[in-house]
Image (cartoon, rainbow, N blue to C red; front, side, top):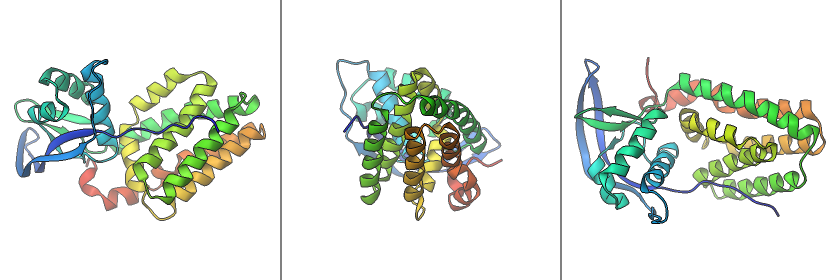
Length: 265
């Protein structure tokens, strides 16, 4: 049946707050719940360094909106939740800040960043440029076994969509594209794209529950797969171009529905 890929879940704790910015550098917050566990499935792998595991779990929680834009992250709470010292927590938060997924206010708080639409557009431009060349390359000479692997990934997505398991569906969506990067031998570019995908991934997560959206994604994946199988490079590129344009073409609606999650101005 071939390999299938999805993304895991995370565990952390936050303080849920109403947030306001005053004179651009004074943070005022009013906490509703001083300790609100979001997920509890994290298990520390003692054979690996702690900081990368904390980073991966927090990043996943942010991208799936378990940690919503504006949520406050408290290092002591996070250390307790993950069962580690504050040193790996600090390291993980620094990496998240580098990706634009959190904002650090010295002496005040660390907040999950709001979604930056301009950054999402840049990430989309990068990904589209890379993947148009990838699907062209794959369609000109499909690697053995790739079509079967992509078919298995599509079948996985269909079952997840039927169960309305949206986070797992997006993980499987990433898995579909990851297989193409792997087949093209450019996994370094996959890592690059994922590093810049935080804002656009959150827009996609907000857009996904829209009626019919999962069906559109699955049809588009099937179109890409079919074009590669037929060795039709122009059709593969056109199908990919249509697929990647979906969320950004609806960005105004997404922003109007979730204004508190979007970076204004």
